[in-house]
Image (tube, rainbow, N blue to C red; front, side, top):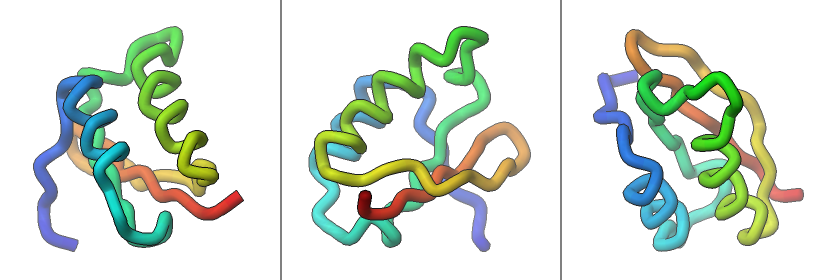
Length: 74
């Protein structure tokens, strides 16, 4: 897989999810390790947008400095 540019801003990642028109399996959401806060609040805010679409998390792959999150239909 080629190197992706991860999101390092919650609002930008949430907007990307809101505007994504493909299938959940097509969304590869790269999130910077900088957003991985101890409580998980940043990912909770992004995941709320995923859940609104009727999707759910389907794991992630850790890369150097970011994670690539995968999703599936509920």
